[in-house]
Image 1 (cartoon, rainbow, N blue to C red):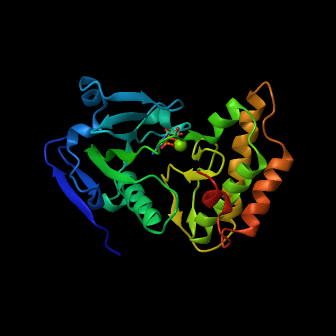
Image 2 (image 1 turned 120 degrees about the horizontal axis):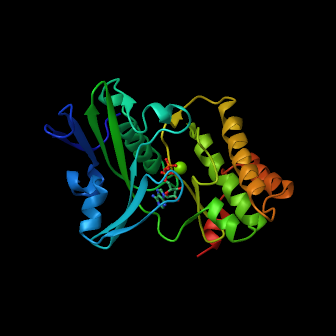
Image 3 (image 1 turned 90 degrees about the vertical axis):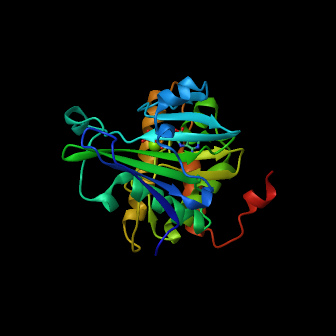
Length: 257
Ligand SMILES: Nc1ncnc2c1ncn2[C@@H]1O[C@H](COP(=O)(O)OP(=O)(O)O)[C@@H](O)[C@H]1O
Ligand SMILES: [Mg+2]
């Protein structure tokens, strides 16, 4: 399926002299190259801050709208070899373009994801570096941040389970489902973010793998906390809602504000 993307080739950027920006045409404007440079937003006085963690996601504001700019960075041991460079396997295999396309597909399917705005890659030797811009989801905090602030009610755990099930029902596997990639607004609105390496798959054990990864992330956070914020009752509540599925009306969403 072709997706409405506008393409701008960057003939002179980067040492290898090649790159490209893809913009989600539905956004109605073409993203200029400066948007991918945090120092541009600093100079404009429009940088709002950055995410804790890997520190490669920055937030900026433009004409009253807020955006997240993520520079793709490697994790784990390989990061010591190359912090942000990936092997070039062709344009369509670049992480930012894949994530842009996949997020647009999910949005079109009605799934709760941020609006994906634009992707850039820049060739660098035998590899490339990449960036992605999404619209900031207003008034959200990550599941991890919410748990730091206090316990969550069972209805919220159920809403998270139902949300994940909606993605899985459409075959979307989130290989990095963790407490920093689940965003909450209020008690009942749930979003998933960060679809680097996510893909569509036939039904399979990967769905359990996503859930196990989330549980491990919650356990890891709890181990580091003075007070436990997650117990098995809450996790069972999430699982029960996941198993019941999203085929039912989302009462938390329609009931909430
Ligand atoms: N569209 C968005 N809306 C709100 N917050 C976001 C958005 N994108 C990223 N964030 C915040 O930035 C953090 C890091 O972004 P993420 O895309 O998960 O990159 P990574 O995990 O690779 O560092 C998230 O955990 C979240 O707190
Ligand atoms: Mg993340």
